[in-house]
Picture 1 (cartoon, rainbow, N blue to C red):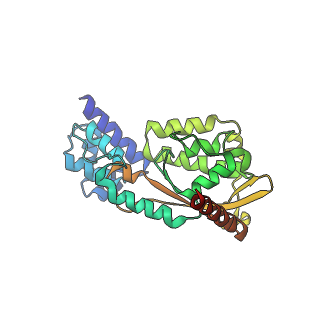
Picture 2: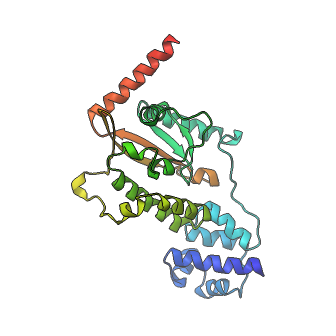
Picture 3: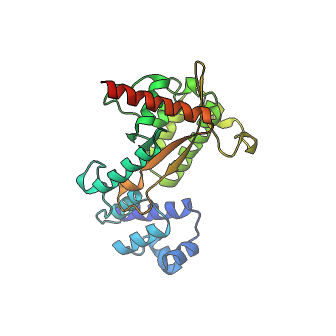
Length: 273
């Protein structure tokens, strides 16, 4: 009874969160509105296939699809595989290829909550220039590194604009996935000094350019970068669906040349050792 009640509440929550009426969702799932109403009221019990059908119609992420299945009394169907597992070797090769292709410019792979999973040498050189090399094995969360007051913030001259935009994206994630972990990440970011003021400031308009840049400065060196974020196209694993590949590109030739020089210097140093 408790599981069934959880499913009813979860189904209603997802439908309302996605902004669908019962009639709209019933049409998307190719079932009658009456049957959907009975499912939401607990007057009908869903089959496993019905749970998956409704979740797909609502575009529920795989992790939350598993939660809906468990709430309805079924076992999860979507795996969550460690990225280092042998069965994901081809995916790992593809990610390594993407990171290598981005050289000498930075690129990273993060999970849903911006925990760093993979990075290329360009990303390492950027971090080392700004804050020094991290201690080996130290876990890195890019959300904290960007928003917290003592990591990248001192070197990001347009931090308020970038942080405001980023925190709004985490707010959207929290609204979309409904997980406690994302809500906790959002709370942590909002607790940092200056974040509320950054959110209250008007967003950058089109006069600032086609994309919002990240403007770094350390001493006499300035860097102008913008980023792209890519995901895997057809994931059928929770881990893979939650991966994000963020690539950094220079916005001017001076920034591009600096990264090329860093890469050449690193190669020369490696050849000498």
